[in-house]
Image (cartoon, rainbow, N blue to C red; front, side):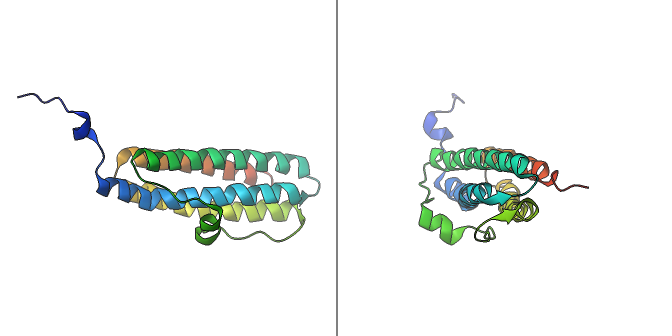
Amino acid sequence: MSTTKTPSDLATTAETAAGVAQFLAPVVIDLEALVVQGKQAHWHVRGTAFDEVHRQLDQIVANAQDFADTAAERIVALGLPLDSRLATVAEKNTLPGLPDGFSGWEETVANVTAQLDAALVTIRTAVAELETIDMSSQDVAIEIERGVTKDRWLLQAHVAG
């Protein structure tokens, strides 16, 4: 009797895919919101640390987009669709809003840090819950958590005393 697995034996179950999507889809939603709000903050930051914060926000936005793609591609690779349309992102994200208009760099750093913190709650929930569902998907969430935590640290370095 052969113990070689066929591709159909290795396929993810519908239950596993649904479990992964339950926890990675909110990660995608929050990261897509971070992309849009990060650009808003980027365009409206003002003050003496403008240049450094402006550049850091660009990096946060680029990283958030890459992380969202990684999580979304994992869901789709498991055979499920993902709804990250603008209306869905606006309705379902957990990030706090930004004030209208221009903001000093200190306020901008505080606001974006709060957004990163909200996204990290969602990401860390995915890390914890995916442990018993799918370890490969948990690895995706862990990679994203490390990256967002690093972006938070780099942004916070601007206000460290």
